[in-house]
Image (cartoon, rainbow, N blue to C red; front, side, top):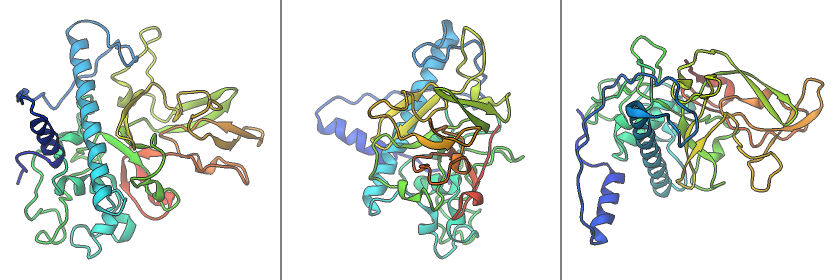
Length: 331
């Protein structure tokens, strides 16, 4: 059964407008086809999408994605306020295994995390497919089942709909465009409402990184799949070289545009920059380096080095206690 009406976030926003004495204008937007074609020759700068009709559509889609991410961030904040400061963890919710058969923290996959938020009425499932998505195997989940979800172990007592899937590499396809931090034991303490305000909570999905090699002043990344669809929207007009850029919602609720794969768009030593990683270069020497968002540098450190700032974002089809228990999917 599909959920109708307002989500909690939408209802709160509407109540705020009415309480302020303002007039409410409801605009009905025509639904956009699920299959969005990639836009070629589009500048990767956040304020420049080229010219003409396609440029206007791309800008509108970017704004809609920003709104979706902001809504997800607000929902995470509300969840933490209701749950002693923690963001949703399916392993905490489904302790009786009524919803999925996986045990313990193996439940903490991307689809389970996001589906549990939908089940509580905070969001609608369609929000998790980005308006900028170009992978045709990622489709809106329009038949979310609130009442007795058939995919659950015990549909009567289930706590979310496991029919919402993340694995877009499977023949059945997936329903999710957005990545989140890995929820392994070492980094689980960041998945809560308190902490650095600029911590990334959810972002546009990114490419699989085969390696992140240090060089003077930065990091050189090598894609595992050079033809990844995550590069289809933003391109450099000067070189037409595919390169990732995307939006993310931070812990403070703001949505930030990232023009590169680094977790830090400022020089590493600039005051207020994100913590750098103490990694080993090709000669084994300790070097401070930027943190690459979609690459886990956990095995690239030096004895006694500092990798506490290491972020690793992805869409995860398996989960557990250790980072090795998580499987991220890419295209």
